[in-house]
Length: 299
Image (cartoon, rainbow, N blue to C red; front, side):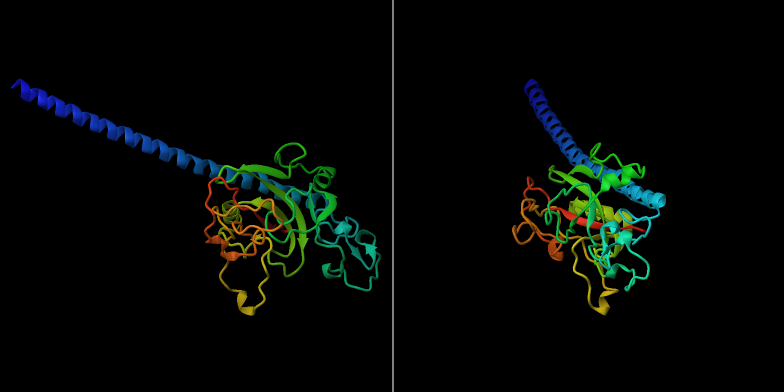
């Protein structure tokens, strides 16, 4: 009898240990899952902060500049061209701000020279580091123009760095969003007219911002588009399906090269629409490839 009871207790003890082990493993699994989910939640919160407290506030600053001066950023107040950086353009061999009446040509953007320069606060990323199609840099300072007219700037990265915002990509590498403004000529696939230029976006951040601004992530349509897209040329392109945002988080950034695809086969930029579904190196230590977007302004 005693031997039987001892055997039962031993089996019960072994069973209890198995239950304990199963509970411990379940708890460990829950903790690991919570950590993974927590990282995604934190990243989504950071993306929301970039949209609401940085880009939206820069759009408000641009609109306030227009309301206070009656012109778009960097334009002539006495003879507006309605182009960003218009004060540094020429027409009829005269500066746009000094042009006289009775010009022999119409005062439309196509007849101005020196258009298309972007107004930034410093160069930031070199041309080609965040996709194709970077415009030349204007001599006008974004910060000086805003401060001169009493426009309050978003906090950004701090005093003097209001045009920049730091964040981490999905691999934990620090990236920087930079805001500029420029005028695009008619026919530009990323949007004609005055646009906010947003450099240094990871593909998933670009898709998120497009979803917030336009309601759907489409890099070819709406007010938020990718820079460097080749224009459509056929009549049936007008109602064609949109295009997914180039690249994805498995693609490494060619941050040290001049262009994405030509110098580094692991990086795919705005010249390769198939990059949305391409399979990159998938190294979790790589810097995720970066893109540039244009947000079309109302003025």
